[in-house]
Image 1 (cartoon, rainbow, N blue to C red):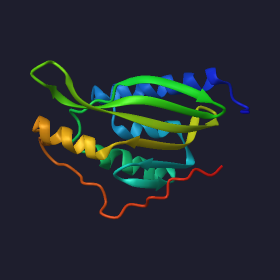
Image 2: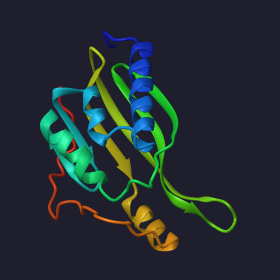
Image 3: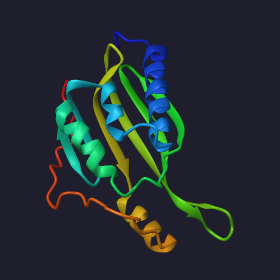
Length: 161
């Protein structure tokens, strides 16, 4: 059971997606997503590892996206159970194959809603090998600066209330 309704959680997620769309249109920076996280939130990324605390999440959101300005992350679906939201999305590289299909890999995010329009946990899951294969196939390379993830990121992924 959750003290929050599924409609409240999906409404907050809709606002999150609206901000993300503005980010992808380069109207806002990636740190604009921080407004949807509690001060003590944790974010787990498959390449960058676990990041704890809103200040560190803001830094991660900006640094991890440098060089990926031409990528997009279309939302496909979502499901809510209790205070957990799981969402499916695509990690889409720029360009298309000769047959018109996109270079894209599916991803999942697990978010834990903490109330007041904020999440206290997000874990993104995707097959990084697939993404690297798509980079090779597409010939994509960053147009300018690009930040590599840390060599030894924190891999602790468990959420604890």
